Image 1 (cartoon, rainbow, N blue to C red):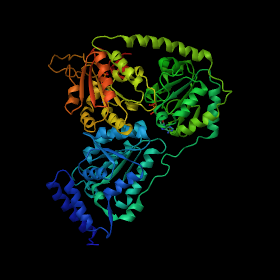
Image 2: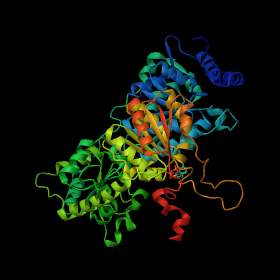
Image 3: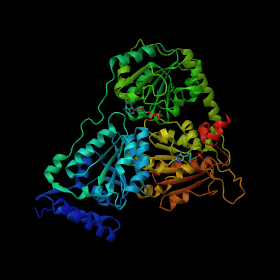
Length: 609
Ligand code: ADP
Ligand code: TPW
């Protein structure tokens, strides 16, 4: 060992080294070198390993192969070293989109997506994505570098000083900080387990700058890492709970199965399909559960949604919460005035039960185990739902579908939402393996009902919060983790939240085709400023903007499409070539409604009712 210092001496030298490093080199590498030189003085003899490599090795040991992030103090070298060690590092232009990418990767793969950010502002930029992931039950880990604990805790004004752990805690499932190199293995294991087990969600892992340069004896370092065994243990439902549910279902005259994104996440696709088909019960997919069974399936009740929600007597919720997206299980949507609905709810979170209305038959466990247990109780003697019920649904479906077909066939000029979406609908039918990313208001609501999905986990959207800004982050993740074509269907306002990431899409040459539904504003482009000043109305953008030029600026393909034919041609070419493409789809600025289909939540509109 070269020299051993007291802790006080080491800290003093460290802060001096840091000060000089920061004035010399704004990109952080000098800081890391300074930290290294100080801690190396205390390093053990023989082969050593530093904090950087312990973090990288711990992630690799647990099957993590990709990091989404944005470099800077104190994690620049971590991104470099991770890349050198064979991890794929996808660098973004803003941390929120790296975080969204991590969340989508988590949803698609059942491995926690990793987002890496710098301290304070970078951390805060990533936090929205972490909170959104938690809200949506997507597993992700936000790893953020942070400044010196001693300075942060005394509030002495460090570079990017912030008590990040305290701030992250209420916004995620769990939050941890690692102070010593020998605890990195435990820290990462705990983060992975917290993200994946039970109800999945976001986890925050705080790694102070000092940690990365700490060294320890290599063999001991290796031994300190933990390979997480059975990170999302199966949770077998209790037999009596399964029987209670089966009994309730047997007595149903008008049963309905409701599939949510938890069912899509669970990857129990074959059993879910078998449950639907063996029972013969009509089903409704929530938006991100579309494609678990093809939307064209005879038992899909999507085209008779209002009818089945009102008329069903027993509803089986599988990985779907009775939140605002399902009108809290109450009111007109459910025709509760006609008598109480009876609910069976399959969920991994016991506290979800009775959150909005009484649940008569909760089945607690992982969806795979719960659905398998229900299936085991369904034999050849199972009575399929009465023909009056399935027949009445089929009748309504036929009527609504033929009405929709006529609307979709129209070719107005300029395009409206329907004519543009009919083109995308045909393309997705031709390439059912493509992943659809979707955000906006009208663009979201119409696409959800018009664009049929055929395979599980092919639709990513604004989720539980209805958040704008997921578009490019989700698109990057979808392309990176699946290698499949991505079609991002974006309102022009929605696109603006993450638009700069088209550079990221071009930089990694990802097979993403972004279609901007350009109707000149938020919702529509027709509002006028009533005050007479020269400002435009708050919802109005620059008229006739050319978003396609943005993609061209970075070497991708840009197309301005003013007709359905132009849109069709550009989209088909983009999907076939896999080249980054942005199609500026010019949409009638008077089309659509304020807030899409959630106008009723607008305070002004709600008051008028
Ligand atoms: P949607 O928005 O599609 O209706 P939600 O996000 O509201 O879906 O609901 C998803 C539900 O699925 C959550 O309550 C969550 O606890 C549950 N869930 C997620 N993964 C699993 C799983 N593997 N097994 C059981 N339940 C799960
Ligand atoms: C983070 C509020 C909901 S929908 C929307 C906004 C701003 C954009 C609608 O316009 P767009 O769509 O995209 O042009 P379209 O199809 O109607 O033309 N900030 C965040 N999240 C939300 N949901 C909002 C604001 C909002």
